Image (cartoon, rainbow, N blue to C red):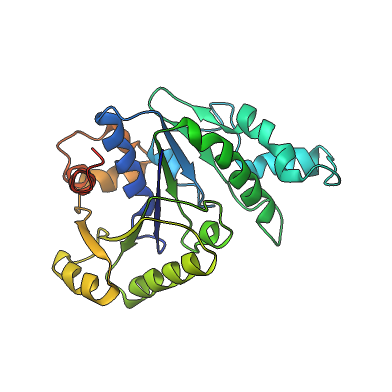
Length: 254
């Protein structure tokens, strides 16, 4: 089982990259696959053609609401995260023909986001052993790394834009990873849509991480994102998809 985490500032193309990775693994016959949307913005489900509500599934945050707020469940005794695990299996895990899916969802009350994050961490510890690949779309704020939703991963991909803040985000991500002792094998940087490819080597030298390339700018992908269409259905000759596929091939994933 391999766990791949995508991080980056908001708007750099994290969710698109994760969705295109999923498409590449599906096309290569890699299975089973679990997609995890740890970003409260909840973009990944739409990008892979999943409507959780239509499928009768809930995000983990919604399950917290129905269990402990609307349902009046107690948080005393058995840890709440453990109590949620059975509900996540039954009501939160979307099981599809090409991949399965879990979403953290939007913050359920004011204040700490710890309960849904802890529930996701507990569920992942039991779930991930059933999959060949686990692809995690991280929030821009790196909350999942800071709270160690995933304590051990294989590869981390940080998607860059053309700003200094984007490179600062890489430094912050690495600092958090080291501070909370998330174990990882490789950390890579990737150019997002707006990133000039010619700056790749410069970023690689400055940040000391391997630059895998740039996600190709593509109007067809932009239209899919704008219209809420699945990136899984992009044609196999789509430039953005080909660029991501080549990155995965360079790492011998497909």
